[in-house]
Image 1 (cartoon, rainbow, N blue to C red):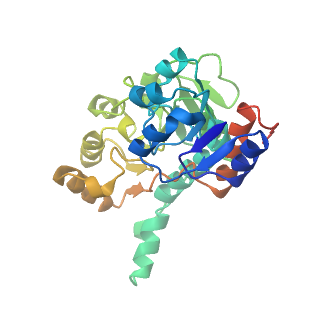
Image 2 (cartoon, rainbow, N blue to C red):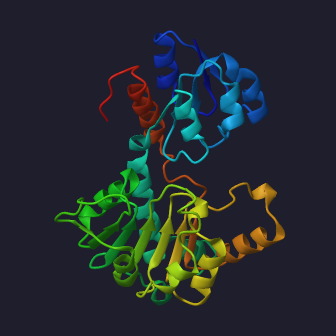
Length: 311
């Protein structure tokens, strides 16, 4: 049996696959065209966001039994057609949700306390205290949109703060409790001082954070997106910042993360954002900690029946 690994992963997964009798082809740089040529012999695929697993590729996958997604988000996999072909699709969001939650908190605290901005000023020889007076997270209302693994992990990181948490999930109910209050989208937008998106990218969520979304943000919240770039409309984020509908933006994801392919408009948008003192952008690393690198492989190995893992 052949298992093709199309992304970088912890050696734990390679070892467990080999112990289960698989011949492992570790190809973290494989292209789509190369994979189409090699997938007919594969019984298993390990993927991330590098290569699209679409219908034509799946049609060529004559022996494929399973697809393992390291991390969360299945937007690049034609899961419906895979299921029709009897191919099992599993992901491992449990493996990197803690890393996402901590990263979101870190971005929020950095912006609220002007940590990065003041550090850069000190590097340039400027020492400004009054101008860099911070804002405490304690006592604020935090809105979480999407209450799956990462949304819950972010709520968990907030336990040490005296905050009110409003969580909205269109497809989940009955999760509210002492620390988290279920809320409608309208309530999250009306009452939150900080709003964090934890949504998969689907046709329904594309440009979820658009002009109408920001118009309803009554308290000029800090806006954070560490889910998928296309869940926010970049132009709408820029307008919301310019019109002071939001107090700042922390983006770990962009609509187009291949900077070398940018159009003139995309380059102008990114340059504008990078020049704003109340904007923080990181290169899609929220779920990319050293610990999550191992845990995603361990969780996937467990779901594939290769090992018993309890993180």
